[in-house]
Every structure is written in structure tokens, then in C-alpha cells.
Length: 439
Ligand code: URA
Image 1 (spheres, rainbow, N blue to C red):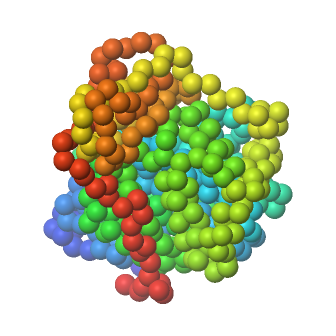
Image 2: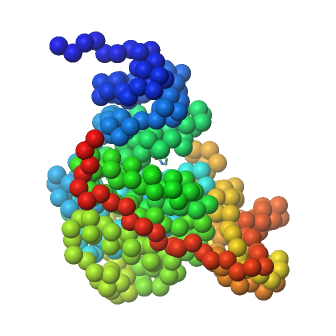
Image 3: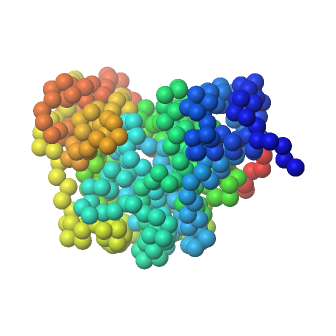
């Protein structure tokens, strides 16, 4: 006979002393978070003890599973065996999902993604998609399955039914200084990401100033934990480090990023965004065991087939067909060039600060529920390492109204140095386990 469930007091005392918690104890924490049975102070104490003492692989797996099971699970792979998914740890100008999803779908890889809203300095795919008139992102399991069968892809937004335990724990991490604990990050990301039940997931883990965790070592560790924990839970997974020491591609801003995505889907658009998309698409195909060559992917983009796929898929989700045929994505009217103050080389882009300034200019939300201005945008003219003449345009800002102080702060994010600098590699290593690890 199992004994009585341990009390929060006992569980917290054990974690504070650095002991590893067992399955029952971890489940009691997640259940307490989801049901309200644990108070904010008890959960805050757990988060702090976990952040300081750490969680081992088994605890991380149990916490992930318990948080996942606190909400809906769609188990899509039971009906659509090869369904895949991709997760980005977030960045500035990261519109890869908008291109990747239709690209995979036309190459025979069904993909279902619950996209996110902008968070902190990072943009959100859901906010970008909402520039499409009529589009509905409120999917449930049946709707997602219907879309996968009809158009090979489904794009939704995570609702309150997905991992409610994370909703509460995430809000408490934010006010208890425990956001950057790796096991807590992993449990938080995976409890939502694995809820759709994809067979294979690729993680795009950003590094550099605009990344959630800027250091390469931390990004590697996060990748290993995301991949290891997913595999332990029966989901094939790999991670790819990609650079966020400068924004990705030519544009940031919701409407502008959708326009960049459409351009990429017609074989145009910036080489950097195309490259990251192609690499991630190949990683997903490899993980899913589907034979796809780079040239197949390139052809799908260059022929416009991926563009047609996106239009068909968004129309199936309520997007206006006339708009999808000729998207109108106007920019905000106040244009301001940001000029190089002297001759030299673009040596650094304060990408995190740029993301926060874009939010301040209206491209994101300062508080939940804020309206978003889709036309606010920043166009990047220079890349890290580029040679600049005095007065040469480094970037161009599109604002709703003039704001000299904001414009000055945007310009200060671009650093020009006398000496040439090398940009970090755009695409870094792939992290995978050959077989599920056992703890
Ligand atoms: N994204 C999440 O969903 N959770 C985290 O903890 C960090 C990033």
C-alpha cells in the first residue's frame, strides 16, 4: 500500500536539503500548481530550491510529464504517425516557422505547431500570423487533425488548456528570480511543446545577444536537456544552435516579417533566413526518417510550391483568399534611416535591446492584451562585419509617429568599430542522441 501523499512541507524540506525528489513528490508539486492546492509561497519556495539545488534528469523528466499531464494532450501522432514540430527558443526577426511549415508540408512532412506570442524582447509567430485577415488560430485536437488531413499543416496558438501547471509556475518564476534555471526552462518548454503529441521535434536554440540564453555553453546544455528529456518521453528530438547575435534576415516587425516570409516562399528573400530554414528542414526530415534532399527543398521554394501551400493552409484556417493571393502588408509611415556615425565596420548589434525597443515602438506588447501595431518595423541594411562609410545607412526604422528619443536609442544599438570583426557562424552544431537515454 502506498503511504499518504507527502505534504508540501516535507517535499520542500527535502528539496531544500538537496535531495532528489521522487515521482510522487514531483507530481504533488505539479498537481498543486494546476489545482491551486499549493499556495504561491509554497510554489515559489519549490522553484527557488529547485533553481539552487538543481533537478536531476529523472526529476526534470517527471516534472515535465506531470506538467504536460496537467492539461490537454492531443496525441496527434496516433492518428498522423509522421507529424513533426519545431520550437525556437526565440529571437528578433525570427520568421522561420512561417516558411518552414509550408516547406515541410509540400515535401510530405505533416507539421502541427502551437505558436507563441511575443515574450520579453522576442517576437511571436502567433502575432505575425495575426496580420493575415480572417485567420483563426484557436485550434483544438479535432480541428488540427482535420487540417493535417486536408492541407498537411496546422498552425495554432497555445490556450489555457495546454499545461496549466506551467502557466502558474511560469508567472511565479518571473517574480521569484528563477526564470533562468535550466531544468525549469526545459520542463516549461516541453510541457507545452509535447502537448500536441508530435512524433519528432527539432529545437532551434539561439545563441548570442538576442537569445534567451546568450552564452554558447548554456545553449548547448539547454539543447542536451531538451533533446534528452524529449527522447526519454518517447519523442524523437534534435537541436540546432543558430546565431542570434544579430537579428535574423532583413526585417523585424510583424507585417514586415510576414512579407519577408512570403518572399522566401517564392525563392527570394535574404540568404540568412533561407539558410536557417533549410538547415532546420533537413534536420526535421532526418529525424523523421524521411528522405528529402536540400535540392528538393530549394526547388519547393524556388518554384513557388511552398508559397501556394502556405496560402492554401492559411485559407483553410479562415485567411481571406483574396488577401493571400496579394498580401497587403503596409509599413508604418514615419521612415527614419539609422546612419553610421563614422567609417568602420559593424562590430555589434544590441539585439536584445533592439527587440525591447521594437516592443516600446508598438511591435509587441508591454502588458498582456496590449494591441500590436503590425506596421512598426526595422529593416537591416548592414550585417555584422560589413564595412560602412560615414553616413551610410545601417538600418531603416518605420514608426507610427516621430519619436526622436526612441530613434536615438535604436541607432545606439548599432556599434561601429575601426577594426574588422568576424560575424559568428549563422548555423552551429546539431545536438542529438542516437538512442533514447535512460536515467
Ligand atoms: N519559454 C518557455 O515556454 N518557458 C521558459 O521557461 C522559457 C522560454
